[in-house]
Amino acid sequence: MVQSLHEERSAAGRPAVAPPQPKGTRLVSLDAFRGLTIAGMLIVNNPGSWGAIYAPLRHAEWHGWTPTDLIFPFFLFIVGVSMSYSFAVQMSRGAERPGIARRAAKRAAIIFLLGLFLHAFPNFLDLSDLRIPGVLQRIAIAFLCATPIVLWLGLRGRAVAISTLLLGYWALQTLTTVPGQGPSLLEPGADLGAWIDRTVFGTRHLWSQSRTWDPEGLLSTLPAIGTVLLGSLVGDWLRSGREQLEKVVGLFVAGSAGLVLGLAWDAVFPINKPLWTSSYVVFTAGMACHTLAICYWLIDVRARKKWATPFVVFGTNAIAAFFLSSLFARVIVMVRVGDNVPLKTWIYQNLLASWLSPVNASLVFALLYTTLWLAAMSVLYRRRIFIKV
Image (cartoon, rainbow, N blue to C red; front, side):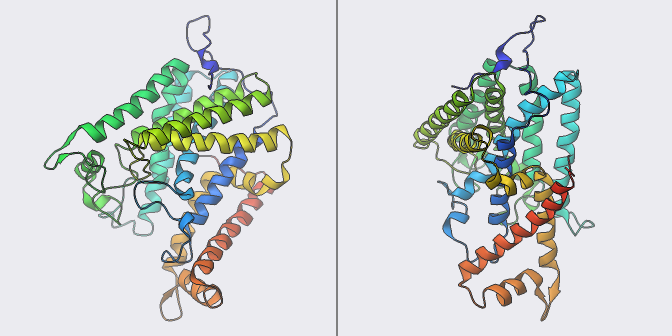
C-alpha cells in the first residue's frame, strides 16, 4: 500500500527522489515517535531491580512478544523513515549520492564506536571480554547497509531487497545445517546465527548472559536491515504529495497488513526478538505504522502538539539521550556508598523499596531515571543544541 516516489525516473534513468517538504517545516510527529521510543527504552533498561519488573516491561522469554519487544525495531524503523527525509534534503541541496553514502558511512562508524565504548567502559585496558555486538552496533550496521539500497533503488528494488532479506533469513534459519550440531534449531544457542557469532567473535565477546549466542548477532542483522528499509518506504509515503488523510489511512492499511502477515508467518517462523525473525520484522513494522499514524494524525494533522513536547525533547537528541543515560547507568552501579553498596541499589532500597512494593519501587526508579534525562535533554532543547553524530 506504500508507494515510493523513488519509483519515478529522472531523465538520466536513475531513481528520482521526491522533493522534501517545504523549507522550514518538520515532521514533528516523527520526532515525537522517536522520543516515545527512547523514553520506553530508558524505562525498560533502567529498573530499580532486575528481579522486580512488571511483565509488560520484560522481554518475552523467547518466542512471542511484549510491549518491550517493540522498542528496538521501532527505533530501526524510524531510522529508515528519517533516511528518506535526510537523503532527499541533502540531494535538494546539490549533494550527490556517493557523497551522501560516504557521510552515512562515517556516521555509522561513529555510532558503532560509541557502542563499543559503552561495552568497554570503564575497563578500557582489558578488552578480553569486550562484547562486540550491541544495540548501537546493530543500528550502525543496519543503517550502513540500507544506505545504498535507499539511495540507488526505487520501490521495486527495495521490495526485492526486503523480500530477499526476510525470505533468505527464513531459509537460512530453518533449512540449513549447523556444523557439528545438525539442523538449525530456533532455540537459544542452537540456530545458525548463534554458530556464526561463536565462530566469528568467540564466546568471550558475546552477550555476557549467554556466551553462546547474542541478541544483536551478525546473521540476525540481515532482517534488521529489512526493518530499516520498510521504514524508508514509509518515509517516501509521508513525503509524497498526497493529502494528509490519505497518508494516515495508508499507514493504517499498511500497518494492518504487516500485523496480519506477521501473525500468519508466526505459525511457521515464530515472532522472536532475540532471533529478529522475519515474522517479527513485519509484525513490528505493522505496529510501528499504526503508532506513527496516530502520532501523525494528532500532531501534524490536528496540530495537537503540547502533549508530545517531552517526547519531542527526547526525539531531537535521541542518540545523545541513549548514550549518556546508558553511560550514567553504569556509573551509579560503580559508585559505592555505605557498606560498599552500589549507589543505584542504595537509592532503590532506601528511598523507594522502603515504602513501596518491590515492583512499584523498581518502576518508580525507572520513571525517575527517565525524568532525570528528560530534564537534561530539555536544557539542550531550550538552547537549541542538537547533538548529531
